[in-house]
Length: 327
Ligand code: CUA
Image: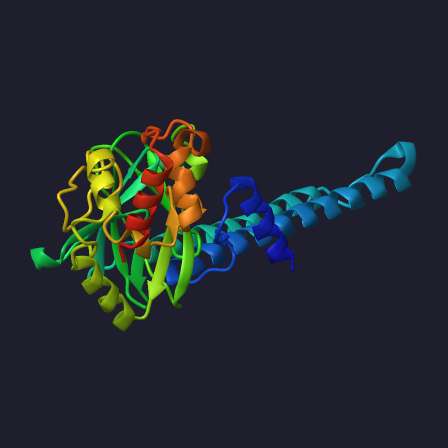
C-alpha cells in the first residue's frame, strides 16, 4: 500500500500519462538490484535517525532529571566508551553500505555477450532507435518504442544528437545519460512480458517531461515475428490518397521504408500503426489523437521541431488513415 502510494506520488511529479514508471514494481534483474539497494540504504538511514533521536531524547531526559548540577560521568572512561562504540557501529554500517553499493554497480555493468544490441539516439524531444544485427539486411530503424525479448540481456548504446538527455526505464534498468559525440553503454532485461515506460530523466528543454517512450517486452518467438514484420516494406497501395499527401507534406522529414519518403529530421514512421503511443510517449496511438497531433502540434507540444502544417481536414484524415494502416 505504501509502495503504491509512493509510486503514485512520484509518477504524479513527472506528469506523464500512460504506463506508470513503477520505480518499486521492478521487472528485471538490474532494476531489482538497484531497487533493493535503494530500499536497504533508506532503511539503514531511517534506523540511524531513530537511534540518534532516541539517544538524544534520553540524554535530555537525564539532564532534566539531574537538575542544575548537571550530569556527572560515573567515571572518566565512560564518555570515551560511548564515542568509540558510536564510531565502531557507524564504521560497520558504512562499510557494509559501501560493499553493497559496489556489488550493485558491478551488477549493472554490461554483459559480455548481450542477446541483442540496440542503438538509441536522444534528441529534442524524441528517440531514434536502431536494431543492430551482424546481418546488415536485418538491421532497421524505428522511433519512440523499444521492443525487446523477455529473458534476454539487451545492450543499449546511447548517444545524443543535440543536448544531454538521459535514458531510463525504471522497471527494467539503471539510468544512463546520453551525451553528444560520445556513446554510453547500458543494458536492460525484462523478466516478464508487458509494457514498460521509458522517460528522459535529464532536463533537456521545454518538452523534457514529454520525452518518453514505450517498451514492449515480448516472448522470444513473438519478438522474432515482430522483427521480421519490421523488415517488410509498408503495405499501402501507391495510389492511396494519404500516401500522396504524406509524400507532399511529410516525407521531407520522415521515412517510411518501402516508399520514397526518406527524411531523417523526424522519427522514422515505418510500421507506425503498430506502435502504442505517439509524439514520444505523449498520447496513446489512436486515429483521433494522431489527427489532433497533425492539426495542433505546437499547441500539444510547444517547441517541438514538427511545424503546424495547416492541412485541409480531408488531408489530415487521409494521412491519419495511411499512417494508422502501416502495420
Ligand atoms: Cu530529453 Cu529530458
